[in-house]
Amino acid sequence: MKVISIVGEPLEVHGIKDRREREEMVFKALEEVRLEPVEEIAYRYPHMLSGGQRQRVAIARALVLKPMLIVADEPVSMLDLSVRAEILELMQNLKVKHNITYIYITHDLSTARYFGDSIAILYKGKIVEMGSIDDVLNEPLHPYTQALIDAIPEPDPASRLRDKVIRIRASASISMDEADDHGCRFYARCPYAMDVCREEPKLLEVKDGHLVSCFLYNKSSV
Image (spheres, rainbow, N blue to C red):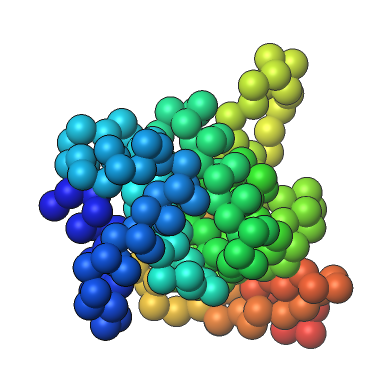
């Protein structure tokens, strides 16, 4: 499929049958994501575009229906750093211009810090911590969140040399399968695991707008 068909397909699915109207809307979406000259890009095939251009096509396809919500699953994970920054900046600009809400799914906490307003940390399908970006990443409460942040590469050599706390353990007392089925999902890996962690912890607010699912912060259950 050519770019014009890829971006225009959602319009056809949603009942916009007039070819000229679809074409105008596709061209407008391509302009929004800075794919120019529009008339040339629209009639190219994806293999004729760079990785960054293909990602812009994907954004245009999502944007063409003027949504209020876009789910972006690892939108920059396969791109070079320079292109990654360009795509994130584009998405931010579109967010402000069109008042779009993104659900941004990523393993890269550095881009999450740049891109998000609030964050939820998931481990094995369960939310273990959530709150504002600044609260969760600057003052992580859950041991899994702390381990994720410790694992972020440090560009500063002086920072790389500092000691980091090891927050992941392997436990012989409980299998990983059992940990998945009962209690806290992180129990088998948590260095702070207690007997009560064999039960399911609730997601509780421990600070203003900062929630965590961990018995370390649920004193009434310990």
